[in-house]
Length: 483
Ligand SMILES: Cc1ncc(COP(=O)(O)O)c(C=O)c1O
Image (tube, rainbow, N blue to C red; front, side, top):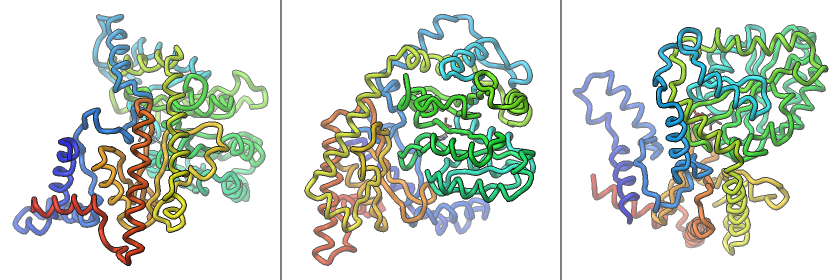
């Protein structure tokens, strides 16, 4: 077992030891919290801060999709960017509505807006905050939020504090279900006559499932049901930035829908290997005479709404100079078309994965027995564009942990994800592909998944379906030794 893996396991085992029973004399405040954490420990699902692994472990987990971080390209571009302005002041020293609105920040926002063919861009401290801020601040009392059932936790957080009067989910990636929800809202006179608005929340690529939003179809649906333009989209482009579209500009750009989407949110923390989230606000008057003057005002209003009602903008210092410089460095690389090779390699790697795993001799048996399920593998050949996220579902209890241990002992880092991050019964290994994953590494991944599935089949056939597979046994033995 290599030292990275050993360090990770030691840490996980240590953190998973139940605590509450040994805290009889501790203050009840802490005991209550530990009792609560013990519920997760008992299920083997405690989240722990992981050590940073060396690059020799195959990375199928990080958000460095384009390898800008690992290759140090972003660091070099960042240092150059800082070097161009050696007299910069580090801190914004105030919020955007006070002293903190400095010219470099405005200039970078302007460049980003031009890149995305958007009228304005607003840099938030993180993608999380951008989502929370927008979803909380835009809908007014009486308005509705309609959202894909699988949207990110940050959108849910925004909804919790929003003044909206309705929050209605629709079935994941299902334009018909969106239609039904919108049609039901149309029974309400205020939505029908356009005096109340609807914010529709979707993601370009869903972070846990890796599937792409049928945005074109949804835009059409919304136009049909609400032709007055009182229903608008916010598209979270966290996972499509750098992956889809011309120069990695995302799904909206790939589909040429810039004029139909009110708000796009791009994250810098993933492909760009920086930090922060950019809210792009489209100004419909710029290129469409279909939209009325109210929408023009509404769009000017959106930026103003952020500055007035998105609390991260009002009550928090503006992004610092180095943060903005790191975002600019990432965008410089992307804008200059220097991530094309990386984007292409990800496409190749994912296709190779699907081709290899579906032609492995164990595939059919493992999927028939519901030991493995990879929804995106079903029709992969018909899709023109792959995404970098593939959910390897392990439908049976605890199997995501068994497979995770198996991968770990095969020098592969791909984390298990279970409830509450994904719905109950949909535990999985979330595999993320990168520009730095070689084809040999993809082969090793496929071999490890299939070896594990084969072992589970043998256990099942021997009437031993409750027996623990070998990698998990090794980990549990280690756990027993350290207790
Ligand atoms: C879909 C989605 N939205 C928002 C975020 C938050 O972005 P950030 O890391 O910039 O805060 C994430 C990150 O996990 C994400 O996956």
